[in-house]
Length: 350
Image (tube, rainbow, N blue to C red; front, side, top):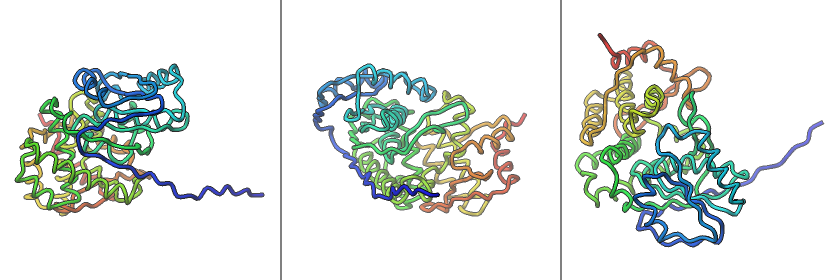
């Protein structure tokens, strides 16, 4: 005996990304702004001039990738339950990628899903983390292994919030911009070589180009079953580096910069790109003082950590590799000996 449950339907998860000065928003519901002490101290008063709600609450979480964990999720939800938030309530993620990932994840699971808005305050979160609906938290096994695809209602990007960014944080965001240019847009990469993003007008242009690039990919593959995985160029290596260093030594964009260099070495080994092209990418990363080297202590341990990556399936490691500049190839059939040879180049040698 069989009972069929017919659930076929078309769900429109479309939303807008506004790149402009933040405009006033009024909500006829309970709203919680999720932020951290640093962002709150610098920018909360500015945000509150633009936000009004039936009831407005501020929930502050500890800053740092190491606090993107279940305990933080529990703390936020405890606040929401205490204030009797319901399915018509809304969350606002006001901060960088950590705040955005946690807020989106809480929104996806609180009472089986409530709306949330992204107001990213770092360059990395403006061009990457706030776009595309990836939410999640880390655990001892790796980065973002618990999470959901859950799209925001709206994303508001205002470069006003970047005025207080430290140089490292700014550069970490540039790494994600370079990542998207290398994999999908050679013309954009060429433009980045000749335009300094420390210039305000150049920066706004780069933000728009990066978001347009990512949006085009996400619109084709929301749940990362195909081409969207290419946005993880550099990340297979970066996630291992972040986990090995307990998320404290490198900002995410810094780890991605190192991961891109490692991926490029592999791409050169496989004749997907030339050594000269790899050097151009490294030079551009270094021009923003991004790290491009990492000393591996144990290559077998590093290699085994690849299998905890979400993109790895059936004991095969999926690597996102640049195909020259402006194109990308996804490979999951790379011989272990080749990988160990690449890792050995980053090995600590006495």
